[in-house]
Image 1: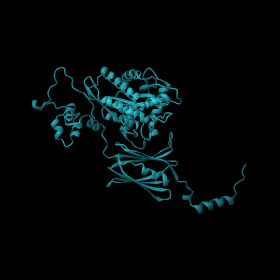
Image 2: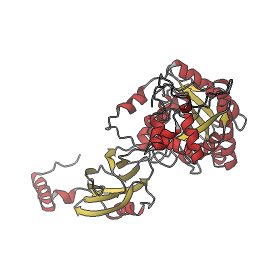
Image 3: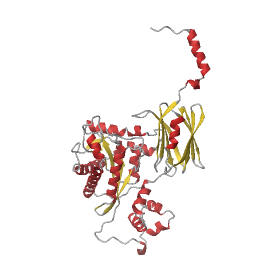
Length: 453
């Protein structure tokens, strides 16, 4: 047993505290890593440290600038490295500098290329990360996914503008007369048709008997993870977020070059670069472009390197179809924790997207889509299970869009990790998924769109 501490020792310790002062006794947070994730949607800046950092932000409107004082940090090497990581092609940040303000106090100044809505928040330790201070810089003028889709699909050449106007049900002269022709195309897309017919000279020609009217088919492709969330990492260091983006891009090329029953198709990616997208936002993006299908692309992983084969999942509202499916859903649903979701933001639409339960009809159509795709995927590689599995994946909860999650292979298996890095396997897999999509639409033609944007 240790001897009791005497009154004299206590007084000496108290005197030492008074002489040194509290600030000198406190240990400053050490910067472990700094990261910048630039994207059109938003730019994220992350400072990872071994202690919680306090931030006080100030936004300047003109010129646009964000100033943040960070308390509890030793800025010397780690913070200065942040400035070196800034890329000139960052769509939101023009410049960045770090200056010392006082003991354990640093000022981070971010010069912006456009007005932004900043979110500054802390994330607790999770997975491989320690404490993170996050700056999410959202443009005030948000990127409209439908706007981008129509620009890419229809407005590449003048002739395509006429085609766009016809497909969207408006007159070309109105679109051309508008100061914002693209806005006119979008705004007019779902306007109620006039009950009084315009003069014959102003009407579009009546379709020939038996001739089908073109209907644009939109497929939302969702490359899993991204940015702060690498997803699973293979034994050779391959990151899930990288390979699934490549597969999605290959599939996009095939979709954009395909017609089904005479109808043109277009793919929309929920992320087309390396940045984090919350699960609910992925669903929300698919709904905003009025997608006919939602396909989330992942690379499976397990605790051991033995499991192998591709899988396809649909949503279940009555429990998972197997223990493995339940484990997989829980792992994928944790992506928001790893990627870093600002839980303080109260977005009713986002919360509703996460909580909405899909209809029985949507799940039935999802199973049909999954079966059509699984049969084709089985031709280019092994299947983990010979049937579509079901579990409560949050990203599949769009109540009005048939949705599936594709696990392309087990990235935790060394052989399958090598295949995922193979361009030939990526191409074959994308081709198989494309054939499954065509097979589904051949048997289940898309319905006419009646929903408002």
